[in-house]
Image 1 (tube, one colour):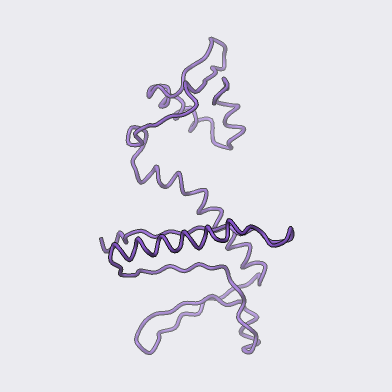
Image 2 (cartoon, rainbow, N blue to C red):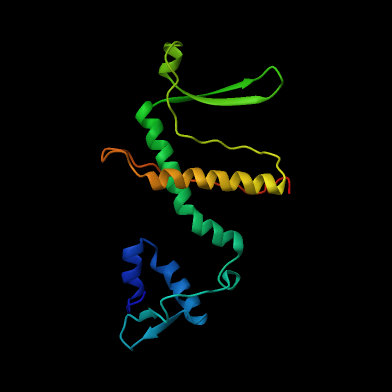
Amino acid sequence: MLEPQSIAAVAEVTGQSQNALTYWVKRFVKLGLLKEVGTSRPALYQAVAQTFIIDPSRVMPLDDMLDRLNRPGWTRLLQGFTQEYRRISPDWLVELRVTEDGMLSRRQLPTWALDDAQAPAPELPLNEWGVIQLSREQARELKGRLEALIMEYFEAGPETEQDEVYFLHLALTRDAVHG
């Protein structure tokens, strides 16, 4: 809101509800981040600066802030998974199997794989989750190596104009369950 705008105009651009935006605009006015400009109705609001550094705990709890920051990325990632799965097959099954050592394993398979056991496994999006025990130094090293690998591909750029666009998310954090 670098230029004066009404809440309705911002709602139209962002797709957010006017009620939710009204709450946040009033909150940001109290925090001194926005100001009401002029006396026209509907009211117009404008940012008081182009850059802010704020304590997020004055706006919302940390877990809510992280959720709001990351939710669009998670949504986009899940939409990509769904699109890729549908590209392979409209119908999917989940096979649950107990391995010889008593571990439960799970894999997704398209319904056509039941009819043709010799069919090659479909190439699914990478979606690996796991828990790994590392020293802090090993975790720093792993993080650095993964970041370097990703940067290598970013810097290389596409090989051709026809290359596809991939959405990438990489995370490494201490496990909340164990820690």
